[in-house]
Amino acid sequence: MVTKTEETQLNELENQVENGGGGVWEYLCLVRKLKVRRSEIVLKHGLSILNDPGKRSALGPDEWTLYEQVAIAAMDCQSLAVAQNCIKVLQKKFPESKRVGKQEALLLEAKGMWEEAEKAYTSLLEDNPLDQVIHKRKVAMAKSQGKPSLAIEHLNKYLEVFMADHDAWRELAEIYVSLQMYKQAAFCYEELILTQPTLPLYHLAYADVLYTIGGLENLVAARKYYAATIDLTGGKSTRALLGICLCGSAIAQLSKGRNKEDKDMAAPELQSLAATALEKEYKQKAPAKLNLLTSALRSLKIS
Amino acid sequence: MNLGFVIGVFGVLILSHAAYSTIQYRGLLKIMEEEFSGPTMNVVLELIIGLVLCMWAALTFPGKFLSIHPDSDENRAVSLPDNSDFMIFNHRGRLFPPEVNMKF
Image 1 (spheres, chains in turn brown, orange):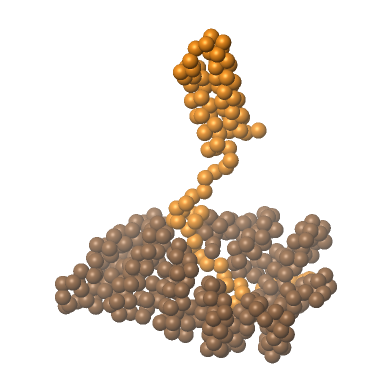
Image 2 (cartoon, rainbow over the protein chains, first blue to last red; image 1 turned 60 degrees about the vertical axis):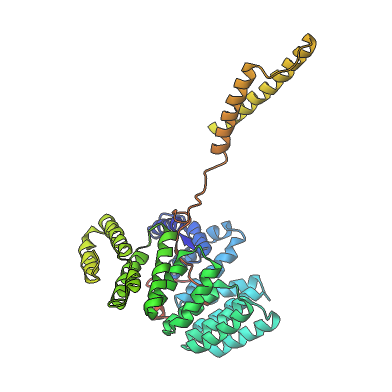
């Protein structure tokens, strides 16, 4: 996960690198560490190091890591010739390496040669049938060919073996959301919250899914998870605050004309508290957009 | 050499001096054949000063404290890493090749 401090650091370094202020290698290391996808910048500045023999040899053994990073970035930017050259260099240095074998299969994928890539992955799997990365690549390949149901099938099979892989659970949840299969997505997010209960982003995503499904019970649960997100972020999650407002007004509408107990569920204090927090945040950070917020809140009949 | 470290060394020196003077004092008592009832006033003072100095050095010299609050900037996750194991290349970016032409 990327924390607030790391995000600020990354943005500062990115600014510096883009304006030619140096620190390229530090930036590339940070991108690798945080696993963020900044392919275009990585490609541009990684190549500038690789093209300079002095800088390149100064890296020592890290040189090969950089080749790999640039190769993947190049595939992401469709600069297939660059990727091919990087992989060729790696191949020369490490013949017979499985890791380079994976890169070659990735290149086949980037070229759109699905059958060849599939064959390459199958032969890699024969050597090591429990290689998680390759199983995941098979899922990604199905997704990239526009077959989400096949991807789901692969992922479910994968998760039966590697149940603790939260990245895979997250991917499955995202695929389900993209197919509007919210009940299944909610299950995946439940699993994710169980594995990493302190990460507010999963609580937030779960609440979003529950709110989208709708219904009184789900809305109340969604509000609980939005509240948990606020608790874990110290009230710095604008999305969760807005979620509380939306849930509150939806619950109030659904429970209209019901008995007293149900009416209490609307908890109007919670809504108005969230609205006050939102107004304060907007006043501080974007005073020009305060009007938009107040009119939106008014349409929800809060404040 | 940093200030905290110097103060820590000083504190340890004071503490060892207190130990040394206690031993001397007991030796003296043995010669005078009196009972040991408690350390002298200056030893107690030295112990207190040594304790304060050592504590201060231990709190400042090794480094800063890390936050344990889940909502502090160091601990609050604002985004998840892009799932690079599931990265696909068949995206709309392929229609927009990078502007600078790269050679390798």
